[in-house]
Each structure stands twice: as C-alpha cells, then as structure tokens.
Image 1: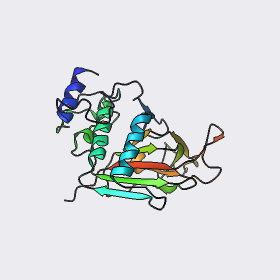
Image 2: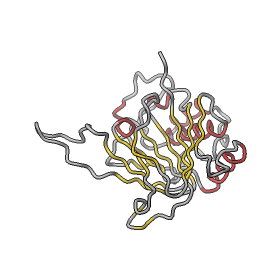
Image 3: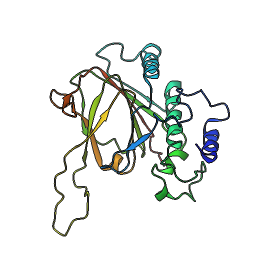
Amino acid sequence: MDATNEEILRQVFGDSSDGEDLELGDGSDPSHCWEPIKEIKGLWLCRDFLPPQRQSSLLSTIQNEEGWFTQASHNQAMRFGDLPSWAAELSHSIRKVLLASDFVLEPIVLGNTDNVNENACSFPSTLFCREPLFDQLILNSYQPGEGICAHIDLMRFEDGIAILSLESSCVMHFSPVDGTSRGFLMDGEKDPPLAKIPVYLTPGSLIFMSGEARYLWKHEINRMPGFQKWEGEELNQKRRISITLRKLCQVE
C-alpha cells in the first residue's frame, strides 16, 4: 500500500488503529482481493474477507453478547443509528479494505471530492468520504431451504451496500430490474431476456453493491431443493446468517 493510502487510513482510523478492527491487517493481505462481477457494473466480491477464526468470534459475539439467534424462531435483528461496537469495527474494516484495494486509483481527500476523477475510481469516492460509512444494520438467519425473494433495497438507503455471509455457502442470483436496458438497441428492438447472474458466496465472503448493481439489479437467494447448485453440484445447506450494512438517506 502506498504512502497516499496510508495517510488516508491514518485520517480514518487514527495513529493507533492497527489491530483495533477485526484483525484484517492493513488490507494488503493477498486474500483480501476484490473481484468485479463482470456482468454487473458496481458489483464486487471479496471472497475471504473474514477468516474462519474471525467468523467464529463474530458469531459468538452476535449470539452470546447480543443474544440474537439463540432459537430457530428468532430470525432477524436490526439496529439504526449508533451501531454496536462489533458492527462499527466491521464497518471500519470494510472501509479499510476498500481503500487498500488496487481499484482505488486516485488519491482521496476525506471530506473533499471536488478534484476526484470518478472515471479513475472503480469504487465511488463519495462513499469513502461519508461519515458514518454505515448507520443501519440488519441480520437475518436462514434455515436450510429458507431464502429471500428477488428485490432491490429500499430507496430510503443510500448507495453502497455491503453484505457479509456466515456459516453456509449459497448462490445469490442477480436479475435486471424490469424495464432497464442492458445494451445498445435499434429503434423498436427489445432487450433479449437475460439469464440470472449467479454469484457464489462462501462463509466469510463480502459483496459490495453500488451504482447499477444497487439500483438496476435485483438480488435473491432461492434455497429450495434444486436451486442451490454451483458447478453442477448441489450445495450442502446449513443455517446461513447474513449481515447487511447500509446508510440511511439524509432527510432535508
């Protein structure tokens, strides 16, 4: 990581930030690489965002300290505003890994985006400058066979949504919102139907949605028998917990 990004991280986390987050290091760990999903602009995947030991620690905190998901009938929890300390640390770690990414190509001055070249930044620079990065948290617990229907997140939330997967692998499918055009067409032509885009999520993986991925593509997880397949193999389903971090829109 170059000196410019080190200075950015110092501004965000302070001089004593090392080791205060979820032990992700400085983001330069080779396992913390972002993979753009080429079919969907603005959709990124970090396959090994949290290693197994940190996943276990996080799950222990969620269940033992928060008291969430201790029974199968408890399947959702939300927080607004000030997030729990572990969620704030998770948010800081997401920003840290994003800033250390090779896809941030232009220097970012926190609080000032006037001179930032958006075309040179694969991640929207305005997301890194907002404080807090996230102020809304929702956790969902899905038993085998349970999923979520196709949707886009409510417009009450700003651009830039992060989803962390825990415990069970799954395939999330993306499909374009009805009425959106995915290419250049001659007058009178219609978009050909697109197959759903599958994204394989393993425990500890993080997806980040912005721009088109956030507003023009629906996402869903169908865990009914026969739908959770990857490379021709049926996935062994267990309980899956998702942690979604979002930012509420400012009310004028």
